[in-house]
Amino acid sequence: MKKTILMLSIAAFCFSCGGGEKGGDSKSAAGNPDIEKGLDLVGKSNCAGCHKIKETSVGPAFNLIGQKYENTEANINTLAEKVIKGGSGNWGQVPMAGHSEVSKEDAVLMVKYVLSLKDEK
Ligand code: HEC
Image (cartoon, rainbow, N blue to C red; front, side, top):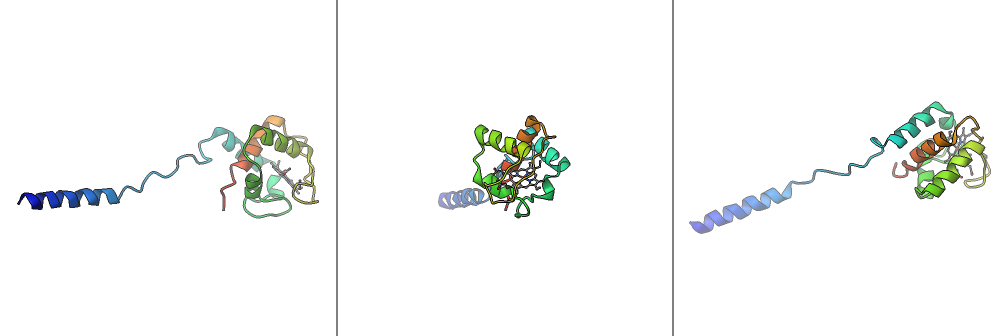
């Protein structure tokens, strides 16, 4: 008799360990104010004319840029300068036109957004 109760409670215990696959990762781009501002700024500028998120068009796909550059302050600064001044040679011979109307601060936010897309597939 005692044994049956023990068996039942073991069975119940094992049943309860099966199901806990919830949670997942909570750190998505949404919720990071810098990245959200960057997305907004990219949307207002002409970036999409040459860049897509996952496909190379005139310029390299944003997810590839995110994969190429580590998300460090130095890289963010260099890329922000490039967005403002334009340039070529890192992806091919097609140059990116400069965006002299974009402030350094805004360019930094845009680059943070671009680098956040590295896991887009
Ligand atoms: C006229 C087309 C064009 C427009 C508009 C454009 N890009 Fe680009 N972009 C390019 C090309 C081409 C490259 C590759 C340059 C190279 O090979 O170094 C590039 C490269 C980049 C890179 C990577 C730079 C590097 O050195 O690896 C970033 C970041 C970037 N663009 C962001 C932006 C943002 C943000 C905007 C909007 C403000 C924008 N681009 C608008 C064409 C464009």
